[in-house]
Length: 201
Image (cartoon, rainbow, N blue to C red; front, top):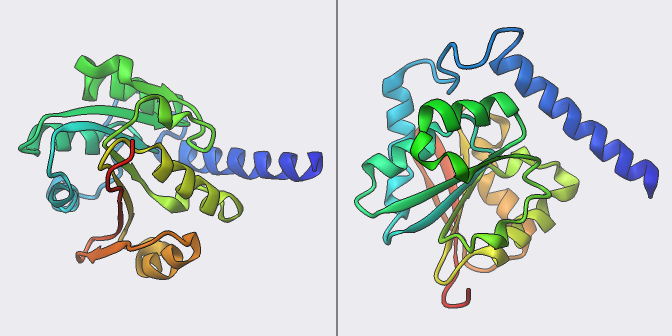
């Protein structure tokens, strides 16, 4: 068991190293836009795809939020008042979120592995997460735990961007979670799987 835990830990550390190198390399944090998009118009088009899922005000937490750019867009463009929260395992990304992207919500951003983060503390109305950020062996339990952590009438919004391996596999992936009645929605940039919680909390 200890060997298995250690192996999983190493896998996450490798993922962390990969993203660290991809977004920051050896450069100083806060010196550039780290959202990773090739153009602002493409970024806006992708982010706009999320708006249709927000039908009430409430708390929204982005698990694997990066620098918080998506949350900033949603707070600004959503017709309903949203309180953003974000978690990411890259300290540089969270620092940018706190200092540059959403400084008015700086206390709502946390550094950590989303797998171990206590989402239920916030009882969010909306949870946004790319399921492929979590290792396959952890994915099912993580998604089910996230759904359970939702507040009353909440939504779990799973997504993947075009160009990533999971873009065309979202529906097949969701079948492995054994959770009822997901809604699938695709644009030419983003693939979604939505789980709504009726009542509860």
